[in-house]
Image 1 (tube, rainbow, N blue to C red):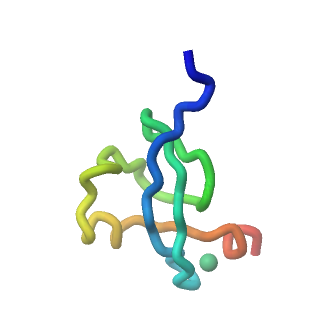
Image 2: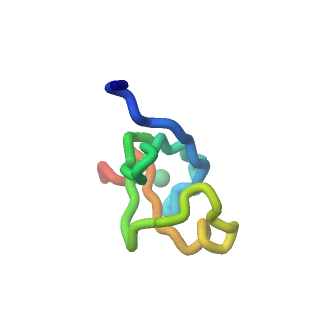
Length: 66
Ligand SMILES: [Zn+2]
């Protein structure tokens, strides 16, 4: 058994300030770090289209902390 299940990095952009985000996700779709997501859970991490990604709302660590 592996204790590390993360295995994908998705690229998104902070909706507030435009910072590029690299978000680590696990194979079951959980966020492991790199950004803060608000909204409906994405069920299509690997095959999200650009318009899907644009509809998502992400914040970087800095904006989230504000
Ligand atoms: Zn930001």
